[in-house]
Image (cartoon, rainbow, N blue to C red; front, top):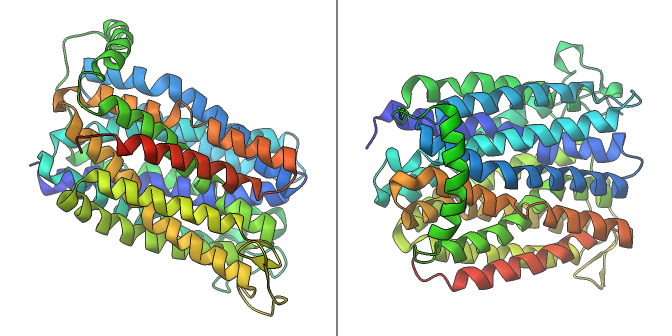
Length: 446
């Protein structure tokens, strides 16, 4: 067992990274892009899908190689620092994606894609530290607590941004009824664009405990060039060795498929609400806050269920729930629920219509199972592989989670553009979840 400050430093990595996912990827910047930068919400969902796909393709190439290089050199924190620098610069660039400015769409998509690659690669090195901090019987609790801390960080950052910085363009007031701080102009959507610099500064501050208190792995005698060469060889060897560890290869393939669907669900959740129901900052903000609360609770409970029953039952249950949620979302429209049941016209107030209420409820379910799904995935791999080889296998985990991560967003983008409806997205994801469930069911060791 590592010391409490060391554990806390490791846990704060998720706290430091989560605002990027919460504010930029899901609830604030992504809907702003679809509603204010793209020509229309359908085109916005398609473009965001292509950017997500490009980031996934880059991660598929980089993650396993860098994970193996990190194993060869030893220390993980220098790699986290390098990724953090890219994340900081790319996130800051999102401020310049202003409506009507030259290259606004290109700046938004490139900044988002580069920041996504950086934060996901950094997670590879952070995950590889798990076996060096706690014994195997604590993997699930540590991983689940990390996700819960991350969700809590996302919640706090969301409250700050929506309560004090991002205002509705019509009323000029934030969700809490305040005039935006620092003179941020609602008409120029500066409150939405500030999420990039805000996420960058948040990461810079809260990543410090990891570097100050969490011990790193001892440095090897290899030089960087030798480590890169050895790392490339290890990627090939790891793919072969994965077949020798019981259940590892099948688990990685299953993870590849169901993580694709989860990435797409989060990438398009806010965009879907804004495009189908016309949600503005207030509705999206409250939706994000409630979803993050359920995500925090789910991650904490899921980690304990993982240690008690094993990672596999937790993951299978989460996949099944997500598939049912996709069916539920697919059944919704502005004027109907469950495919054919008409609803009354929306009244006044937040989430006034029955379809909006049901979409809100389904979103909360996604939050409650996403944390356990992700936390149990990394704890399951930590149990399946030797601790001394954790880096390269977590590189493969990132590879399996990203090698086809461009496929689900790409499939959503193509289906949306082809059928000219945002409802095409959930239909595609059901297939991904079904395949992931079937593959994971065959893993014997959990």
